[in-house]
Length: 166
Image 1 (tube, rainbow, N blue to C red):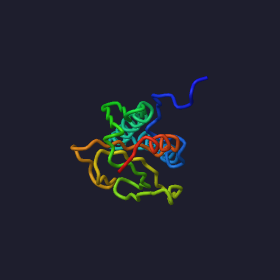
Image 2: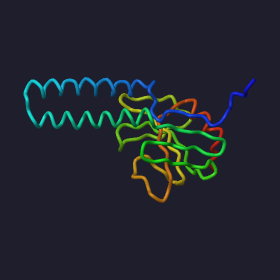
Image 3: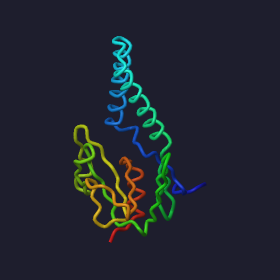
């Protein structure tokens, strides 16, 4: 019988079980269908260009969400996307936090007491960084490695056991 903690483990970067992710996906699809109908109905070049741009961006985001993954090994965590691979050794990790984030500017750091907190149109993210003073609201420094992923409870439990922040 194989042990339950076999490595490497793979996780998706995007939490497809999240209500917020589903809401954004469905509303984006409805908006694009409406824009296509509007472009056909009005025969306007500008609207057609906007719809084409939205379709290309949407296709890119779907490909990104489906192909990006987190690989967890005994020694490190790796985020693989279409364009970039970032690996952080657990010994190098200086920050490991969970943020309730709305947009890219507003974020609230969660601790063990308020980990179950939710907010309308907010999403929980895990941040792992080699920076001591990492803050989700500032631009990422090129001097440090940072991995940002949707909060996935199974992954959080695994990382909490592996990452020891002093």
